[in-house]
Amino acid sequence: MSFFDRSRTVAGPGFSRWMVPPAALCVHLCIGQAYAFSVFNLPMTKLLGISHSTAPANWHANLNWVTPLPEDWKLTELGWIFSLAIFFLGVSSAVFGRWVEEGGPRRAMFTAALCWAGGFFVSAIGVYLHTLWLLYLGYGVIGGIALGIGYISPVSTLIKWFPDRPGMATGMAIMGFGGGAFIASPLSVWLMRKFTTTTHVGVAETFIVLGVVYFIWMIVGSIIVRVPAPGWKPAGYTPPVEATKLITTSDVYVYDSFKTPQFWLIWWILCLNVTAGIGVLGQASAMSQEMFPGRITPVAAAGFVGLMSLFNMGGRFFWASTSDYIGRKNTYFVFMVLGFILYCIVPHTGSIGSVEGFVVCFLIIISMYGGGFSTVPAYLRDMFGTRYVGAIHGLLLTAWSAAGIFGPVLVNYIREYNVTHGVPKAQAYNVTMYIMAGLLVIGFICNLLVRAVNARYHMKSEEDSTLATAARAGAAMAARFTGKPAGA
Image 1 (cartoon, rainbow, N blue to C red):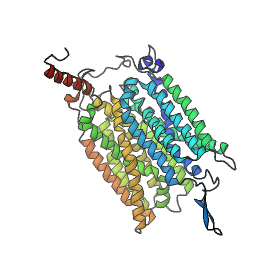
Image 2: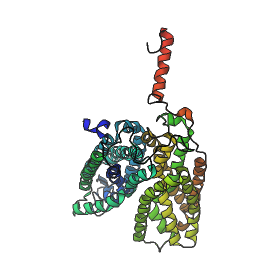
Image 3: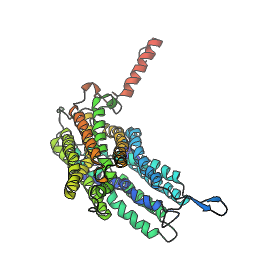
Image 4: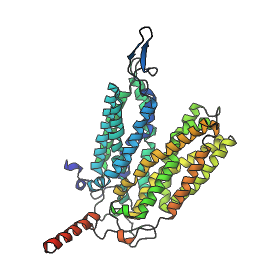
């Protein structure tokens, strides 16, 4: 297993750094399938009934008793699979962030491949046995852990390979997560069609095939990936000797980042930006049809969702690359100000019946939603240095887990409240849009408060970390009781 040690992944002379983004894409395009998981929801409500969902029981009216029949799963039950996966994405990235950072990208990518494929295989067993908790365990928990480890595994490596263009580098990889659904959605539908018969829905077989295919490609990525040798830098690149106003040349230990206001400000910046986008992303089809009844058909709504996915993917690369020129803080200012304007315009587009205006607004909004994900690793690098940026990024992704709850709840429950109180469906989302705009105002204030990290949090050496400080404190305490000098 030494093949997966960090020391075995150090690049030799002549290795091209442009091989690392494709290695990262091998992983991110695979785990990006998570955005396409909804294609399985309806088929999994008909696993028993095949053409329709089975009834919960079979009544024998003459005998006045009930024969329980196996019952197909409900959409509300299946919806928890994706929610669990996103929750464990944030949790695992926080828990395993330091392990990923210190063990290197190859070990992390290999572990993510095992968990991702294993999650599909366990889920396939759950479908075959019609046992829902196995899908919660397989795709939700095991797959969610794979998402977290796989998502952060290339971040620190890419930033070290591209110190001159950190935003562009992370944008290239993370755009794969947004674009994975473009491959996974049609592939999954095609596979299910191939495996489905008149007496069987081919979900389990599709899970197995996807698990095998994704495992192979993620292993390819883990084999290709390399870390730069100590002291390596791109040809012609001169590292800054002194820190600029918002870009440090020092490193902050992963757990010391918790103590800085910068970490929590960026946490809320990401959370609020994602909250404003993810709720809309999950309800884009229904929202467009209800705001423009009779004008946007289900087919057109599906096309709109696909277009949004394209802008989600493209925005990850465009905005992260742009941040290399205008700065990370200014990029988030654009997100907050432009997003505020667009969310306030959306209700107006509905009132005047402008489908074109509605579509343009949300395509830009979703591009900034994706851009928020791809820009934040470089923002963290600017604040906390490169040494532990991957682990700190993992901790910060808990903001994604929180936003995954806040966003859908705001959109769904406010809409339901409005509809039940007589508000026309075409206007049921207006209040939500203004609330989203208000959240971005709070995000703007958080971004405005970001300053350079105080020098007292900077590591003076590799040993100058929270753990080392605690060890020295323990040695000093022992010396007080024994009367011997610390370290004697």
